[in-house]
Image (cartoon, rainbow, N blue to C red; front, side, top):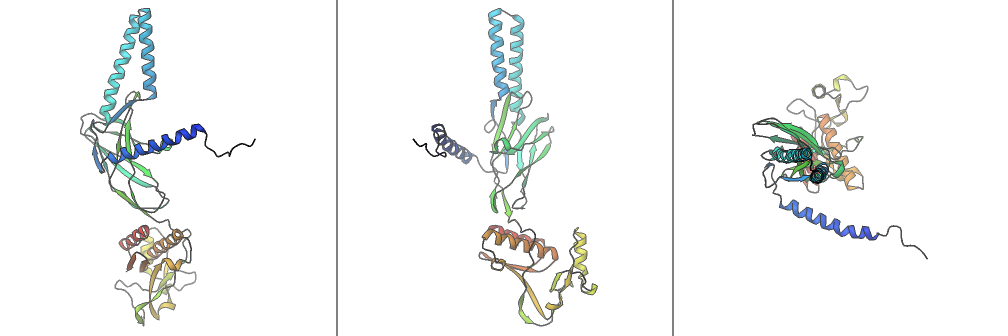
Amino acid sequence: MTSGPRDALSPAASARKPLAVLSARLHSWWQARLPRTDTVLLTQRNVYILPTGAGWMLALTLLVLLVASINFQLNLGYLLTFLLAGSAVAGMHVCHATLRGLTLHLLPPEPRFLGQSVVFDVQLTSERAAPRHGIAVAVHGAGRATRWAWTDVPAQGTASVQIAFQPERRGLHGVPLLTAETRFPLGTFRVWTLWRPAAQVLVYPRPEVPPPPLPAGEPSAGGAGSAPTQGIGEFDGVRAYRRGDPLKLVVWKKAARSLATGTDDLVSRDDTQQSRRQELWFDLALTSLQDPEARVSRVTAWVLQAERLGLDYGLRLPSGEVGQGSGPAHERRCLEALALC
């Protein structure tokens, strides 16, 4: 008699699958009820409390102490039982009050490249006259891999924490569901809240490493003629410095800018392009690659390389065109277009 396939689901696994689907639906329904906001005030309506494992063990211990004290008529047993019970009740009140009345504010996140962690800055503000201790903030739903950022909030002050999130694809992403919790002071109760920020973060494509050589320039619409200099005295036809280039061909203004930014990228005038003005255009079709993401990655590397060399460049995409230019603002427009194409 042959056995069934090894990958067949066991009855226990089959029973767990509907429960997992139901749990996911309830989780989605619960998240949809949370309003999107970058600033949230924690009140009794959005702060939750449950005993921890240590709290349940304390409750069991108190029950045993109470039964033993009743059976053996131990006055000191009664004293110890009610003393511990009173401490637990006071700890529950302090734990809930640690989050209640706290204001959480998310600062706008900066764009990041795919593969880098997006860092969120969260500010915790308290107007209470006493400090708040042992507050943790993290991305909700990471399970055991959750990385908590712990802080104490001073009296009538503000504290900041940074939490990281690594998106799996480029594009525009909503900030994931965040959670804040505390178990101060005894660790017998867990008080937490769920927060759904409204901010979004832009993830740029991952640039190809090592960066490929730049594509050849295209003749400008102005036609042939001597390559004029730009208003700031920088030549249009430049290339990366090669060993043996005469010093008179080095564009020293670009070299000074590179040294000021901490890089050693030198550029020289390209005498082969002096007979006509060249324009540098980046297009997905110039990559000679089949994979769409690899093509976007290569063009991203070209944009970063051209910006590092101080060149003017443009971008042509199926969704639109970014004209010739250079500088941080132009680079950001190109990267945004690549992230959303």
